[in-house]
Length: 151
Image 1 (tube, rainbow, N blue to C red):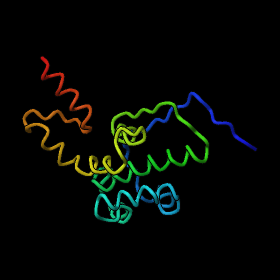
Image 2 (cartoon, helix red, strand yellow; image 1 turned 135 degrees about the vertical axis):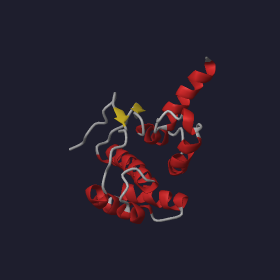
Image 3 (tube, rainbow, N blue to C red; image 1 turned 30 degrees about the vertical axis):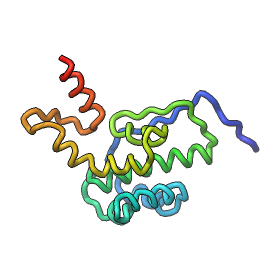
């Protein structure tokens, strides 16, 4: 049976929600798409992402964030190949903007890993503590800061 590629589809990347290794470890271990992404992430980070993610107890530490990004993009790679999805557009709310940027080609996956791995420290230095907005995603905070500067 041949499946025709469907037009008019979009790839939507989710905002980040806690995902424990136990729920995705098999996918990360056995998916060729995940392995390809993990290899790049490991090179950028300088450590084995899957090992650090497996040991992580923090739902939002660096390893967990990069793992979520890696999983999101590996699943998109799988969908494009296995389901023959050829999205015409992509979107991503909140943390999903990072996967969207990589998937669309606006940033390379390696650069998106770099952005994600440095983001917790970057958030602490965006603004002085007295004016910190509490935004946890840089694009939304940057847009808000830009609007304030225009006033």
